[in-house]
Length: 348
Image (cartoon, rainbow, N blue to C red):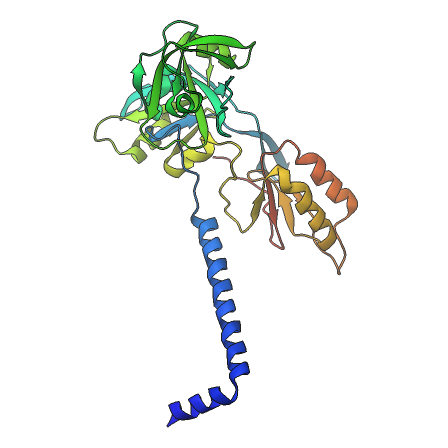
């Protein structure tokens, strides 16, 4: 009986029923889309490529710290404010011996990463080209498909993607622009990564030539730590962290290795917020100037700027100018609307 009444109602009010159905369908689609974005933001990670075969990676601290000590009423309060730097921070290569002595460590591989642009008509397919020492090829790992490893200062191994684009073979010569004047190298081998590498092109030099091009004597970009057979990577990470206690070195494992490799990638957030690349930051700041905003800062930098709306007022022009000026050298801008931003960061 009730079904019959319902069908009669639908026939009598077709337009209303169709409108209600479309509204509910659009609402469900909107909620599903927002839920997908929320899930991606909360659980999304930056996948490592270069360090895929190294469960533990040791890198330098990518922040500049300002430590303030205040003595008041017989109590001492220490604040550690940190601001991330866009340039790669380097580590002393002497730390490798301390890492190697940690329990569960089978091998420590020093890594050198520096810009190395090959001069080819085909280009690199939009990928950034980096140079490395061949000794660190095990961190991905890269394996030779043809030829041999570089030995002399004018020898080079290129990855299979670049070789395919530029039709390079062992014996060909390739001009590379790195940290010094362009130089011609003879290709001695073609290497293929064991895991997918989609965001960078790798060129491998001899150890001595890589140190020269890196232009940081006595320093390395990172250390890749290879655990002993059967060792738990998390326990190895903890052992390495204990071995490096008292230094500024950062020990990463799992998904935390991605931000170590890709410095320009947005960092994971521990609060609700939106990360904005510098290229779009000016547009976001302009919109915030018109509508007011909650908090603006950089991930890992505690001071930040606050542009809260007060009694319907707008963000001040001086505030917007300060943010535009300060974010120029920051890898990513953090915008949080109507959300309290902590002024303190606990040093670990």
